[in-house]
Amino acid sequence: LRIAPALLVAELAASELACVQAEAAAETARASAELELAAAERARERAEAALAEATTIVHRADVALTEARAAAAFDLAASERERRFVVEALDAERKAHAHAAAELRKLRQGAAHEKADSAAEVARAPLPPSPAQEAAGQG
Image 1 (cartoon, rainbow, N blue to C red):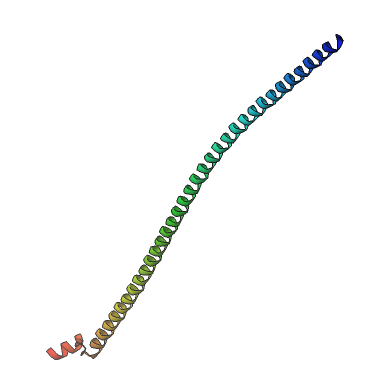
Image 2 (image 1 turned 120 degrees about the vertical axis):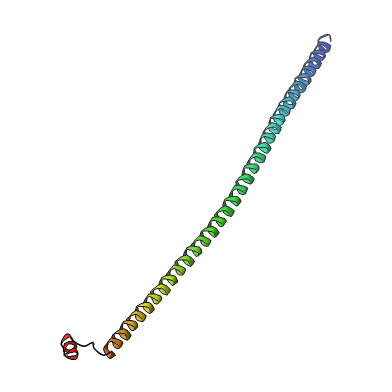
């Protein structure tokens, strides 16, 4: 009969040991889960920080792209204004050359008419007496 209580005590001790081991395993599992949770939280924070940085970079790139588009549009408008100015200047120069050519033609025609008129006057004028006629008239 003495063996039975000793067996009971041994079984009780073994049972208590199994409970302590189970509690230790549960505590280890809980601590491990807390560590994993903390690591996951740190990873989430790093991911959020990276996302915020990426969002800032994308925003800056968007602003730079918008500014570049505005500058390109401004340059294009300036180029168009310059092109129109050059076209207008060339057109004005062409018109000035045409006007100058027309004036030159008028002057040449006027000079030709003056020469013709002068030649006609010379043709209508009496001829001066020849030296022989002058000598005959004096004699």
